[in-house]
Image (tube, rainbow, N blue to C red; front, top):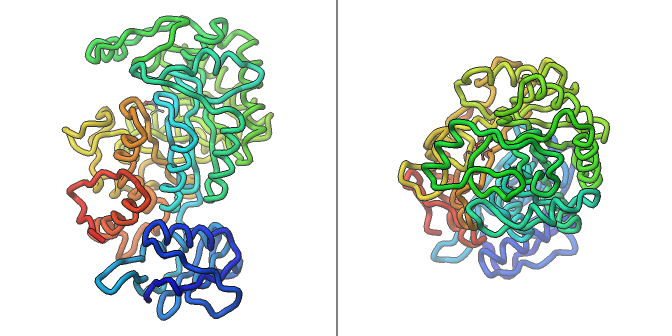
Length: 481
Ligand code: TNX
């Protein structure tokens, strides 16, 4: 059906206004609002129409979207926007008859704002572009060795002394509480839940820059030393900002009560700003921490999150601790063929009544290079072209019941991304691959690479209109318009 200046939109949901704005950004045409039926584009919410977050979309002479809820309507609008095309006679919507709802309730993306800081406007743009792919969780990695990125009233030196720099000595930054609330509200308006992560007990060098009494002296490991030499980066020094990419050298003091006062205060203040159910307490790569200490810390930290009324989330290593709080959600970042103890650690979350998010590093990690010679990104997990990002099955990695898999999250670690444009180059198009893995049924005629590559290629004009700096990977037949 044609889309012209006389096309009207009926519907009182925020999704109607979002549709009108998006069509204008893409076409320059400002659709008008209809007061009553019939209109050329009609949007409704009907809880009986499909499963949660689902929608139906029919495009013939008119377009009608019925969402099961506001999120479903929002997703129906995103699909409609993907069907907008320009040809010689003008703008039109392709015909469609769609009944759609997600396979997994949990479809996430992570942004590491600790290694490089990205401000509120960048995060909002990230929310726009990833929610348009029907991703519904935004995990913010708010602290690491290189910086602390959110203000905490009861420990003010964190942002005063430990937020000023990023990796490579690039500029840092942090979110005030108002900034953080603004991000959370913006995400909610795009049906995304924000999961704040404070990485503990490792990845905590920056805490020691502000509060030296909370953190042990750095414990070097062979990889850190070799990487630092190869990259010409200085080794970590207690109490000084760390600007390298090394991991595994830091730990909070596990036998000091003050550490738990700290964790309790931070978790409480984050929980107050977090309407979503989760707080992530990290747990990865505590390479210098004795296992017994790590276990004790994992038990106490997850219990503190439960005490604050939230569900803890942790990287899969915390599953090595017998007594993690019941119901803790694990985030698996091992490979699609698990190595070492990763699979056991992940399974322990399920044994404790929790569940798992799949972030298999050799397929979902957005910070891996697309090709050997790609200028951004790392290679330790794999080189991940778009096809390998797409072709994997989240329930086939671990030996746990399918119902224990909540969904998928694609993390973007930011050691190599110095600008937000760099972030977008790594995230798009591969976030679209993870979005489809998480949303679409496991089997179906269109759930194959040959179909996906054409459909993702058709997003190019939309991404260009939205100013998304995607990587034009040559595996994809990119559409001109
Ligand atoms: C491993 S995977 C990390 C991060 C790094 C990333 C780089 C995980 C939980 N931790 O600290 O940024 O590799 O790819």
